Image: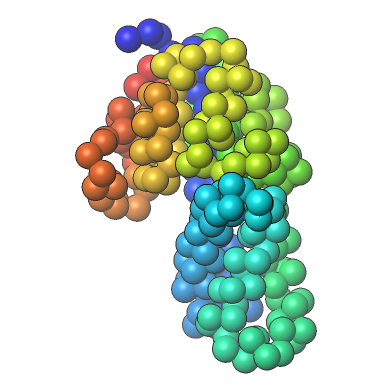
Length: 231
């Protein structure tokens, strides 16, 4: 196999902890914070698939809009009163959305990105997030200067797992998929990227089983540092 020349990371769940909003969610919705955060994330991913696959993408909306709409759903699920009195919950929803702009970064991010740069590899993000979201998240995490590419699926109006979204990595780097390692903590993302042709690292932080669809990622790890061993 060709030696990898670039490493691309998923953003949400991989570099940035999407469940770090759980603490604020618990403060705003006592006893429901963990459930709200989980439903929010699940519905967010479900919405990306709906707008990508339905009516040839005619219902596409940017990731930020889907994130907000999925939060509204989650709040209405855990607090049924919000279904008839949404204005009473609007301020709390806005607090959570503001928190989502500045998600906590995983502690090994900087170390791993610096090591990759030192080895002469191109680094980047390949994410469903829209450009403004990703820009804020990268700056908030202090990762400016460590990423050669911040690639959003927004220009093709197709979210991962659509092949057009993964193709953006090849286009941005000028490399073939076989020359790129794609890193994701989302099993569905690692699977689809493997199908597309990337070499993949699945970061299994939660000790979950992998998808049962007959394909395995190139390698599995428990944190991002494993990508250095993989190379």
